[in-house]
Image (cartoon, rainbow, N blue to C red; front, side):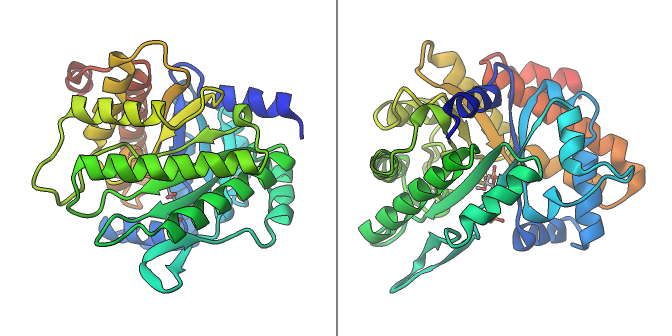
Length: 341
Ligand code: 5MM
C-alpha cells in the first residue's frame, strides 16, 4: 500500500472549496431518475447525459472528484476521449462505485445488506488501469419498527471495512458510505442514535481490519428528521446534531467527511452543509459534499434528453456546484441564489 499516495488523493478530494459529484447511479437508479423526468434510460442517453455534466465549463473549480458507475468509466465522449479523461482534463479525479448494490437481509427483509466482496480485488485492479483513483461502497441502514437489528448494523460495518482494506491494498482511496435512510416518521433524536451506533460499529471494524484512517473518507447521512415525521428539525438543529454525532464517532485522523444528500431538497443540502461549516471552526476533518440528487436534480430535468438544452442544463449544474462549493467553506447565502437567478 502506498499510504503517501492515498493521503494525497484523499486530501485533494476535500480541498478547500471543492466537493464530489456522485454520478454512480446503477442501472435501476438512473432508470428511475430518468423516468421521473421523461427520459428513456438507453446506454446512449446515459452517455450523453454524463458527458453533458462532465464537460460543463469551469466545473473543476468546484468539483474535486466524480464517482462513476462501471458502465460510465468504459464510455467515451462524442470526440472519442474516455469520459474519465474528460474529467482529468477539468482537473477532476475519477472515482468508481465498487459495491454490487443491496439484497434483503436474510430473515429480516425490511433491511439491506450490501454485496460485492467476491471478485473485488480483480475489479479494483481493472478500475485503477481505467484511471480511477478512489472508490465508494454504500451500506444502507433503515430505521423502523424493531430495526435496524444488531445483525444488520454489524454485517454492513464489517463489509464496509473489508472493502476499505481491499481498496487501500490497491492504492485506491476508499469512501465508506454507511447511509442511515431519511425514509420514515422517526425523530431527529432517533436518527442521531442510529447514526452514532452505525458509525461506532463501522470505525471499530475499520480498526480491526487495519485500514489506515488517514487514507480514507467517510460519506455519511446528516442527522435529520425522518421524511414523514410531523416535526421537522430546522437548519441549525440538523447542523449541530450532525457535527456533535460525528465528533463522538469519527476519529480525527480521517481527513474528510463528504455528505450524501439522501433525499433532501437541493437547497436544504446546501444550507445544512453551510450551517455546519459556519457554526464550527477548527474541526478535525474537512466537511464537504458528495451529492447525487442535490446536484443533478435541476440539470437532469432541464436537459431532458435534448441536445438543445445542454447549455441551460450545464448552467444549472455549475450554479448548484458553485453554491455547494461556497457552503463547503461556510460562505453560502441565499442572496447568492437570487443573484444567480
Ligand atoms: C445515497 O446515494 C448516494 C448519494 O446520492 P444522494 O446525494 O442523491 O443521496 C449515491 O452515491 C448512491 O450511492 C449512488 O447513486 C448509487 O446508488 P445505487 O442505488 O444505484 O447503488
